[in-house]
Structure formats: structure tokens, C-alpha cells
Image (cartoon, rainbow, N blue to C red; front, top):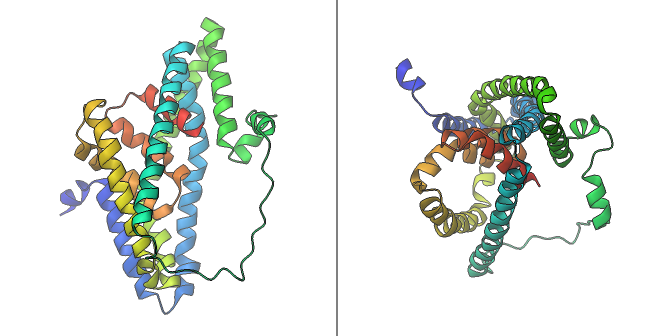
Length: 297
């Protein structure tokens, strides 16, 4: 029995944690305070661990990716291709989403917004946005979890190590060692994902009741119809003809990241797990590091 449990994939364990959390939430529906006070804190603790590991993982992964390629032009080529790819697929995703939503127009319940108010904050100018991309000190980006500034710090350090030549080798070794250390910490945190998912979903169901699982069922149905259409039209085509990979295999290997993103609603928190899944699929680690650089940009 123990051997069979050990062979279960991470995606299976996350699904078990999600299902167990829903059942537990229904059990505590009459006493939601218990789930909120004694179960939710462990979910928050897990999210804190995820948030803690993201910044150093991004920092040292990007520095390592830049150092390993040793060619600034190649880095620019990979980054520019990734950005163009995401721009194109995003446009297609928007078109599919609008088309599917239009098919269900009038099917959704209308919410009363008469008592709601919202103050729109003034958006920064283009110049201010560009200026804010560059950190004024090396500590603030990590305290504020400003990923864009962390990425620029990583790029500057990576380029500095490359241009330092032989004198930068010692720093490169330290970066490689730290990257390995934080990767192992990340693996430990990821193993806690089923428990984290359980603790996150339980209080949601306990507080909101079973209605939270069904009230937005139509919205979820429409969303997933659009997701499936986008996967079939875009991802399957790209995987089959550019990646030379079976879409079924891709979904199977990426399922842990997908299920964690669904349960936590955190794209940033899903980043370390996403990187692990990509490497498991056979993607080159250096390309994975720079790929997530382009995604954040």
C-alpha cells in the first residue's frame, strides 16, 4: 500500500488535497470559524513559503541562465522570440475569449452595483513606468517583491559576470551554488503543495458554503470552453509542429502547476512549480530561466 502511495504523481496528490479540502469545508460549514482560525493559517503559511522562494529563484535562475549562454546576442534572441510568441498567443486568446463570451451573452445573472464605488487611481506615464523598472537600491525590490526590478538586477549581475571574464568566475560559482541551494528548498516546498491546497480551499468552502462551488459554475464553464479552444487551436499546434511533443504528454506533466494555479489563484506563486514542470518535460534549464524572464517582462 505504501509503495502505491509513493508512486502517485504530484498532480494526483494535489487533486486529493483539493478534494479533501472541499469535503472538510462542507463538514465545517456550520462552524466556519474553526476552518478560518485553525486551518487557513497553515494555507497562508504555505503561500508565504512560496512567495519567499520566488524572488531568489528568479534572481539566481536568470543570472545562471545569462552566465551559461555567455552571449548577449543569444539572450536577446531568445527573449525577443518569447515576447513575440506571447504577444501573438495573447491576441488569439483575447479573440477566442470574446467570441465564446458572446455566445453566452445574456446567460449570466446581473449583479446589483448601485451601492458600489470605485476610485480609479491615476496611471503613471510611460516615462515613469520605464524609470520604475530600474531599482534605486538593491534591497527594496526584494522587500516589495517587485519582480521586474529583481529581473533587471539579475540581468545586470549576469552581464557583469560575463564581462568580468576570468575574474568573475568565482562569483559565477557562488551563483551556481546558491541557485542549487534554493532549487532544493523549492523542491521541499513543492512537496507541501497538497497540504497547502487543502488548507487554502477548506476555509473557502466552509465560509461560503456549497454555493461557492456552484454559483459561478456557468462562468467557469464558459472560461474552460475558451481555455480548451485556445489549447486545441494554439498550444496543440505549437506543441505538435514546433515542440515535436504530444499535447497529452504536455498536459500530463504540467498538471501539478495547473492544479496549483487553480486552487491558489496565484500566478506568481505557481512560477517555481511551473519551472520544475518545464524542466521535467525536457526543456533546457537555461532556456526555461530566460523564458520566464521574458514572461515577467
